[in-house]
Image (cartoon, rainbow, N blue to C red; front, side, top):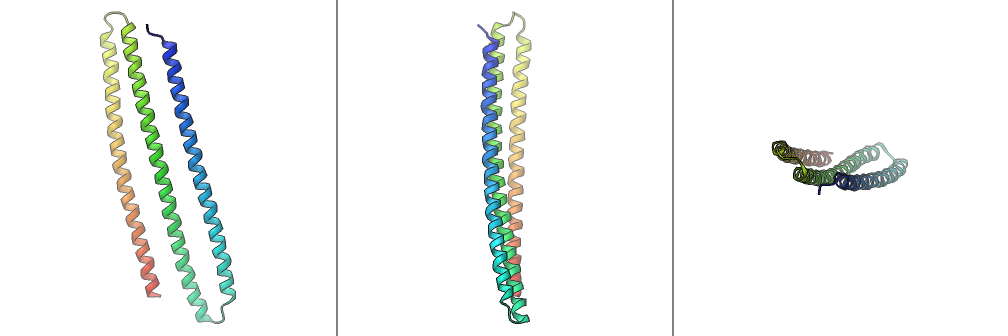
Length: 181
């Protein structure tokens, strides 16, 4: 026999489980970003102190110009490394959120399909066409979600390739600047 209360309770438990996974993933990602930024701040501060000591030790203008060039190069490399690592962390978090969304949608779709099947068994005669319409809608929604998911993955892949190419170009430009100096 069909029991709507039991199915509603099961949906609620599933939603709570998904929300808990999302919250845990959000906290984990935030913790990674905070720890990374604290580490980066400490490193930049240490480099700044080191640079101040180096400037204080300069004896002539040529040494100052050479030091300025070296410090600019070091800062550029640090900024590139920071950006690269930040991008990798964001990409990882995005992949985890996407996987969670896919899982949630699959569970939701399965739950709705189960609900429709159970409800159709308990429905009065002649209501088959309405339940077939529900099934058709679920199938169409699932197909649309799958297409959206494939398109999103392609966009992310193209964007990733473009970011990596830009980073490689910037690294080469920094290296050329170093050789020219």
